[in-house]
Image 1 (cartoon, rainbow, N blue to C red):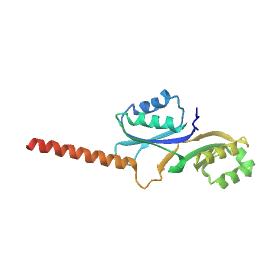
Image 2: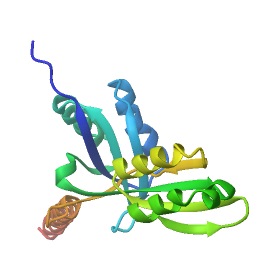
Image 3: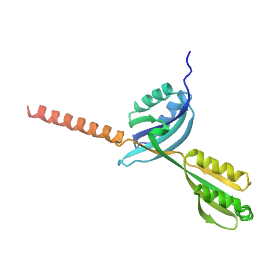
Image 4: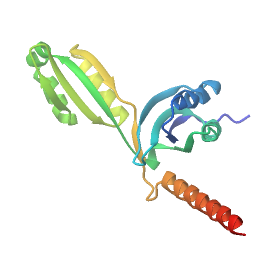
Length: 194
């Protein structure tokens, strides 16, 4: 029996903006006992359509099944899975650091500048820092700062991603649906005339 290798996949799911669809999508992962690593939901560039960016560790066979099950949902417009090399990916990390500790240790500021972190606010209690980048860059900065025992709070966003393809698959899908709808309307008009 061959064991398939698990790797991180990113699913891009487009759906109509309907209450309850997120629950339906996440239920597919639950039924297959696949843990969601990150989930980001936002409006897409298409009016009335939302985009879900979901990451999960899985093997390809399992992720294909999950993608197909999600795409069967009535309100889902399109679903595809990708590996990291097929996407432009970013996340945001937010770090709230103790101002007294940051002021007494110049290495902390040096580390933040070296990785391209942005200081958003400084007050007597805390320093708020933001870093955009890949997951590893965000977590690496956290671990570097944590060694100084200065981190008061830390969070990172879910992944946001766009494909490296020159054509947006959901746009192609919607254009085909529109063409099909127009052809059906024309057929109805012709049958009424006959």
